[in-house]
Amino acid sequence: MKGSRALIMLLLSLVAGIAAMVLAARWLNEQSLAKSESQVVVAARDIELGQPLNASMVALVPWPAGSVPAGSFAKAEAIDGRVVRTQLLRGEPVLDAKLAPVGTKGGLSAVIGQGRRAITVKVNEVVGVAGFALPGNYVDVLVNTQDDRERPVSKIVLERILVLAVAQEASRDDTKPRVVNAVTLEVTPEEAERIDLARSVGNLSLVLRNQVDVNQAQTDGIRKADLLGDVPAPAPAPVAVAPAPAEAKPAPRRVVRRASPPVAAAPKDDARIEVIRGVQRSTTDL
Image 1: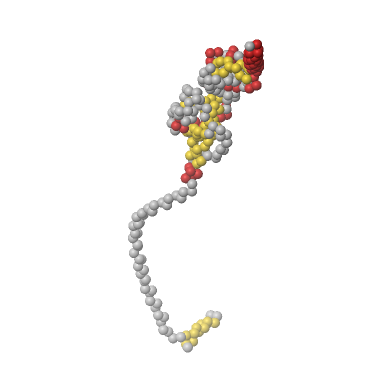
Image 2: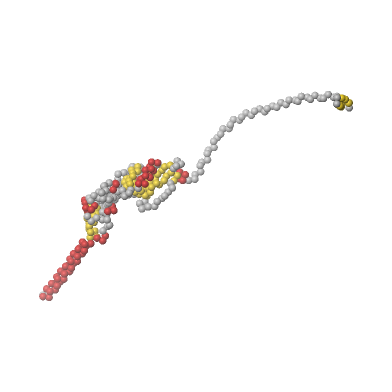
């Protein structure tokens, strides 16, 4: 009996020791994790661009200290009043690069980049690429006008221009095409001048391009002769010309020759030689 009691006590002590070791290891692990974690501000719901942030729109979540995103915030008060420059999804960390500078008011102006401008172009279903030119897309601007010789010409005047908004919508999460009557583009001041001049001298069209394509086309434009190629001009149809009325030929002039008057025959006289010597005259018959 005494041996059985000793064995039972030994087993209980062993189990208690193992349990204590497990609990101690877990506690140490939790303490280690607590020291290696940080707090990061994330979006508590989907947030559209141009909206000012407040504490109700964000949340604090634990984040491994070794992988905290650059530009993140550890306190919700730090982002109060800041305006979002791009759409934030629920659970996405709020980064300083995605926020407008401090003091910026909400709206589309907060989305415009530093040193850039927004200009609105009037479009229709054809000019607006059938509604596929959505906020966040890139387009080229094409103008159809006439050159210095009054010849029709089409030319790409601007390339890779960011679409900020269509009509009054600036949301970039919608992929469904919408036909609108105005598109707002983000341009530099020089590009704004080119667009303003282009729409005053011709008709504008937008050309949708790939999001990751950064190559510049640098075209010379195309004219009617380039479009049609070397097409020979059709031969002019023969024109029937009425024959001119024949002119009356003048009657041949009748030449009347007058007969020459008959020459009077010299009278037949005897041949004589007349000799004059001084004042003397003598005649001699032959």
